Amino acid sequence: MPAAADRVRARRGAPPILVRQLRNGVEESVHRGDVVETDASGRILRALGDPERVVNLRSCVKPFGLASLIEAGGIEAFELEPAELAIMASSHSGEDLHVRTLQAMYRRTGVSQASLACGAEDMPLDALTAARLARDGEKASAVRHMCSGQHSVFLLLCRLRGWEPDGYWMEEHPAQVAYRAAVARAFATTPAKLRMGIDGCGIPTYAFPLREVAKAYAFLADPDAVVPPDSRAPLAASMKIVRDAMVANPEQVAGTRDRIDTSLMKALPDRLIAKGGMEALRGLAILRGPRGTGTVVPASGMALKIEDGDGYDRGTWAATVEALRQAGVLSGQALRVLGRYHRPTEIDPHGRSSAEAVPAFELAPLNELIR
Image (tube, rainbow, N blue to C red; front, side, top):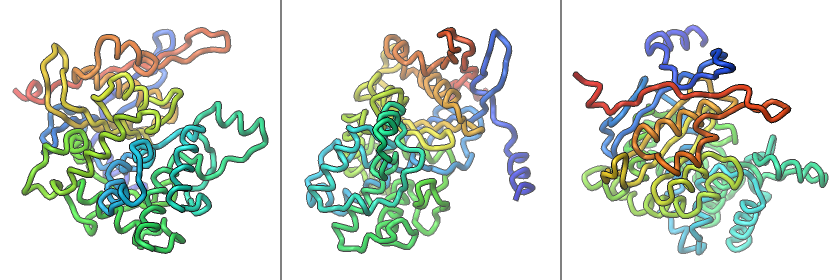
């Protein structure tokens, strides 16, 4: 296996450096990665690195899989609210806000919280909530897991269709089959062609080239841009519902404290959906609106992957904000508000800035790169 991985790496070459970690001007480490922006047809608008790099979607799949519940009639059957839809497309922080939203939905729909099979290890993500639970001697339950919203989709599908919820996380379970079909349609393919793996929360995940991830997020940004005979067109109405729910509820998409997805969406209200996945993948749905000098630009999607998985978050944070800045999406006050993500700093025990992650790349429009 290592030999095969080495051959793949040699064929595609080393990704470009996106972020440099500097301490007193000395480069301590670098974060390499790939970035691509496309329209809903998949036409590349900007790119750096390898747009065809294959990545596991992980949590970036969540907005698309949610369409399975919407198309099954879940909104009408369960009177689902936008905040509930948003948390089912989220990787939430496990704060009380998120728990209240999910538990209210469970009570109304007759779903048992005990059926959640996502685990609870190392949860919740929110440090203050985790500290409070530890202080009070309370052990986090599965509802505080960042993927409990996604797992709720499967449980609601079971409730709606009369399926047995036991084993809902298995690949062959009808809830997974329905979810997988929606994902395949959003990516203009078929379930049989999907490349599957197992996600950290125990359910299937799917792999696509980075360019296809950007294309899917462009579809999420403007579902109406996809029309027949495109096979994704029948999914457009559901994707519009997902988009509007996420845009209206950014704190359900991630959290209230130090979550870049929520911070980006709040800094650019009605203009952006940001959705991170583990191992430093991020999908960005950029809605139609003014960029740069004020020119109104059609919707697009952007996908970014940091090669090393970015255990510190600093590389993903800095590269995401910088890519949006260079694409003309972020500027002025919105960019200043996101300063802690743009150039993340390391603080020593005395409150001094001791190191800084600095974005170091140029994401030029594609037509400027071709001579």
